[in-house]
Length: 230
Image 1 (spheres, rainbow, N blue to C red):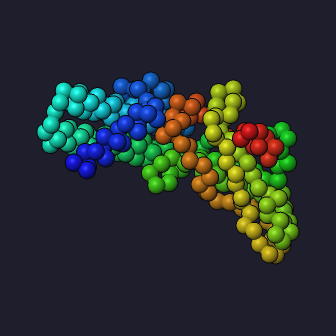
Image 2 (cartoon, rainbow, N blue to C red; image 1 turned 90 degrees about the vertical axis):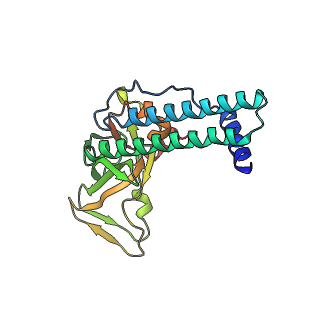
């Protein structure tokens, strides 16, 4: 009974928070860099929501009809949980299979015209805890001397780009390539300062449609980054 009431409460909360109304499947196109991952996330979220909403509707009908055998209602929820687990397992397997062919794929890099570019960088698709992440390598463009405790002055800012250079939704990241040190640091031209660092979750779970338009990344100034978050 406690489990049933808790499940009902969770469903009511889900409905009040405006869960999606998808019915499964995805029309998102394959992306040049993220492949079918946006479509997989989009489809999973839609199918998950459809199962949860159907469960809520059927349980409400049973309760409205005066069902007093709570074991029957609990059975409905138990069967729903099985379907959700099966869906999640298939989704995770599909993501893993797709990621296998994408990890290491190079992503185009550009630089803001206003950026003081003391570095060069490369970017690619990476993986962290089963999710796709943006991975960046940063290299000193010329010989570089960083005074003690001044590495903050070399903070980098990046944004994900969509069609026509538009900034993707909630797609900015801050990168600290040089560790803070209490002594002067020197780097030679061409020296790798940050090697294959995970810097940003592509956040496909909530922005799949947006990420399906990914065309590259751009390193930007702090002022430009601050404007993204106003």
